[in-house]
Length: 148
Image 1 (tube, rainbow, N blue to C red):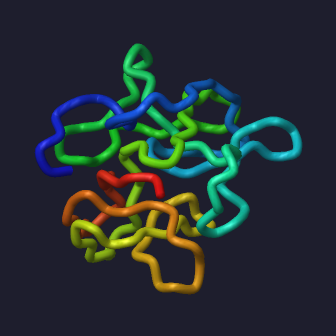
Image 2: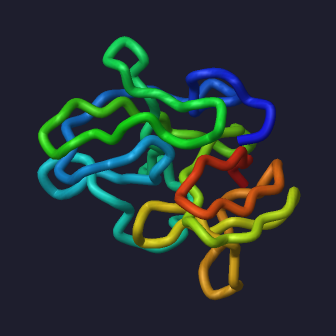
């Protein structure tokens, strides 16, 4: 993550922040939703349309979770753990977990795969974010993006 040396997933805007129990292992920057039991799970729909239902896993610095300046995540949350999330609205800038091997340029449209990770928009699903930086990670990494 170029030029970002903070421990936050929310870059700008005032999204709703809440904590939920995780049903699965989650990493900071993943897009998630609530399952039928009210627990966090990976988004069941690739590239969800903004409904206020999808959220982004954020860090809990007081628990040692966070983001390194390199853009890699420090840790993950395991099933059963309380996980802080944000619900970014249109225009919010956030850090998303980008799937390794993607070559992204500023302004490029991003989709959310059913893995909860961002990928380059291929036109098959609805693009829901716009990249604000260039990134070509060899492993999953955080990318600065704006919610469409």
